[in-house]
Length: 221
Image (cartoon, rainbow, N blue to C red; front, side, top):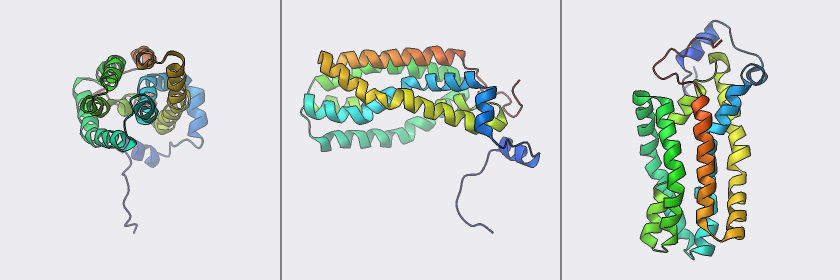
């Protein structure tokens, strides 16, 4: 008997295993059957991935070179933000269960586009308290994206969409932010880039189906 700890499979997936309806090559199958959902999932994450990489990585360069703040101070603010996310992520997930995945995610995307300007405004005050608060201010996404895919391809489809977003949005974001800062010397231009990413997310999310409180065990057409 295996006494190790682990995460239980969902009832939907366990039923697929029992019925022997598991795909041998799910990644290839989901690319062939649901390419639109993969692309939309990646674009929907753009407004989350690009700002996250800027807030988590680029902030060190901006904070030390432009604001002349110590790295330990910036790191403390980021750790505090991470601890707060232990509360905000499940809360946002609960709100998405109650009010709808798409609605909460769209609200979050709009807030992300606006917050970029507030974020750099707080940082540019050069006041440590405001800088700390700006960094710290930094759920429904997982369910929204996963439920777009048919059950037997759900894990592969969501994973490909997630990783594609990291490649096209997350990874290049600190490099783009650095280039924008070098060219303009303004953090608000970077905030404009964040707002652009948020707009892309809003448009992509608008095209994603919303399966909140609906049966997600059935195969999609």
